[in-house]
Length: 110
Image (tube, rainbow, N blue to C red; front, side):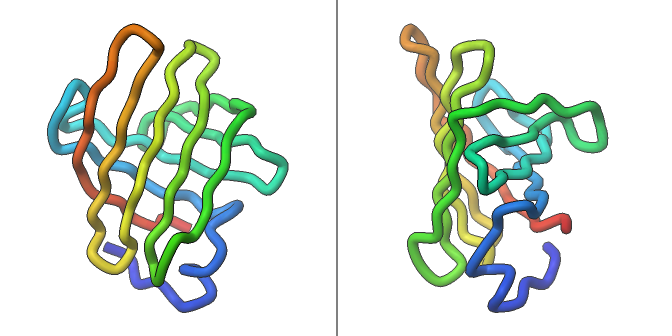
């Protein structure tokens, strides 16, 4: 896991995070996410092409602890809580018909 400074842990807007899922339907997959101040997120497979969606936000809820959420163009909402200090991540995905939990790790890429 990358080292994070106090400034990085205060504001993650514009920084790239890698979500690596260790269980659930996305097991063994990793996705890069960059949340922007304008309410958009760019996301896609690790090192691959990204998609930009609106209706996104990221917020600090404690020391190194954040919650992020967005609605994809495919109708899925992903809500993720993570701790940069421990690298732990828990996500919930739903589309109004299906719901799933995804555990994993998070890494600050840049």
